[in-house]
Length: 268
Image (tube, rainbow, N blue to C red; front, side, top):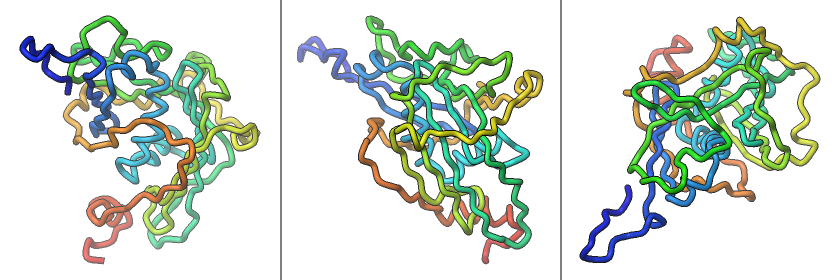
């Protein structure tokens, strides 16, 4: 929250204030806090990349794989290319589990990739406005609100949805490993800079027809405004030396989501 300006103590400068950005995605609201300087100097594309790599992977062990499954609902792909605009992108490499679980049928695994455009679209009167990934969410020179709400919107690249341009210097590779015992949950993940080798994609591209893409767009709309709020780390700075992290599958998550999915009673 920004500090209140008081004439008696001389007030605080804009640089002292911060803003909370509430990101609405798949029924959840994930808040991140940015300083005034970062709000006005960071492009929306860079912020979206930072959110995916440093918040989306940590808030819920199911969320990122849940989104990837919606992008390609008929099969599991090995790679997903997320393009955020302003040259920023992530290549998500998934190591899907092949563990045999009674009563659970896994989707076919295909060594291929799919391209999507992902943006943070500010809400305005209940509807997202047009995203401008090369511009900051809050332009400099205007009063900084205490918080804003944005939708995480995902569009499948097609003949009618051209891909945002990508710069290898602004590209990261995210490695996700699915949990062997709990389908749909991330066990470990790591993020590293593209080095010309780890960002090589499979030869097969999962091409989506324009009509199919229009129907399969994954978008968090304004109707999901009342999503459950999950706290993300307030520090959105990337750590270039970050080691592999393990995501905890809490007991409540397993009981509420995984066991019923497998057809098992909650007391197993």
